[in-house]
Image 1 (cartoon, rainbow, N blue to C red):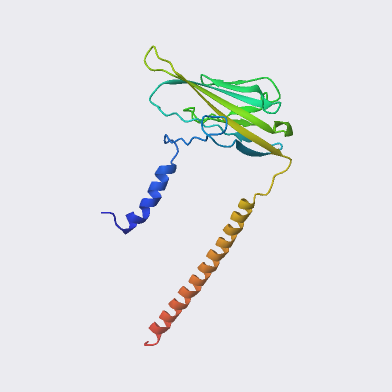
Image 2: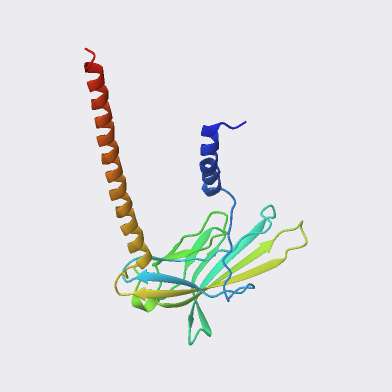
Length: 208
């Protein structure tokens, strides 16, 4: 049986277990460039800072050996022409020559389910649509090598200055209000305890 203390700690332990890093948990994010429906992933960036282009393609059968290759493209001419800007294969990143040369960093996971990249020192010209193409070749025995392709579309919007997020401002205000309320509550508790101790001392001294 779980005691009162254990009952209180059980939800916390379950939360830690769920969010603990290293677990084989993958949440796919389909977009209109994949087999599943959904809008492009919109990413906001600030001029001169870094921006992560998220691309996640989950493995359904992790026990099967796969060879994964990733190609990132930038779409031009009304999203009709794909210009390769980054390649990743056999655990090696290949930086393609062009405006993004030496500004793209591999930001994916070791198991190659997250194949995201990061743009360093974002410029206004980096705004636009990016296409992430993931190819996996599965090995079943020594004869059968099926190929699976997945695509993701990412829209990057570069802003000259940092925009104030209303959600962030609201969260900060609520945090300060909570801190003030907590401080006042502690003061009230201290005053109450002090008066209670003083009264107890007075009752103790009266018989004497």
